[in-house]
Length: 223
Ligand code: ADP
Image (cartoon, rainbow, N blue to C red):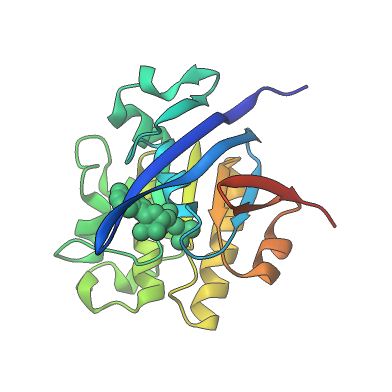
């Protein structure tokens, strides 16, 4: 049996919601998950179920109350958080670009080891056309911004990507482009992907391993 790449064991997480008086609410109640290297799984579930929280736990943007999360069989707490986030990248629903051109965005944080040719290659890999490279990133369409964010995540040469509804802020044509880009990257780079979506048709189209997070528990959907 193959070793899991990312594994969650009995993970709990409580949040304090402010609703007049603050209410403690256990949103993850013993979540277990095994994702193999190069596997793409989807996570669906009602709004507020804790899907984003679950992803954010995996690269330590937030912390579990109890339970264990493993990357390559080692506790994620034993990694330097920067190293963890390099290996496990994240793409959000709303793409956020930095000030400057598309080229500046791709060079950001990678200047020390990426040459101009590397940056061009990165753009090509994320299907960013050459004529956009010197455009102001703030003026891109949302779909183009999302491709810039994906390219930035790729610059770190990740092994895994956490995708938090990466296509749901996009129009249909851009969503299709970003979906096929991510699927191509997954197969070419053998990336492990945890992909949160509210679109059941998308979940079925992109993976045979579909999970639902509901009432604090993660269960695999069959059929
Ligand atoms: P989903 O992605 O499934 O819509 P989230 O993980 O974004 O759900 O949020 C789950 C619930 O936890 C929501 O009610 C949200 O407001 C709450 N929540 C998430 N993180 C925090 C936090 N750090 N502090 C307080 N409440 C939070």
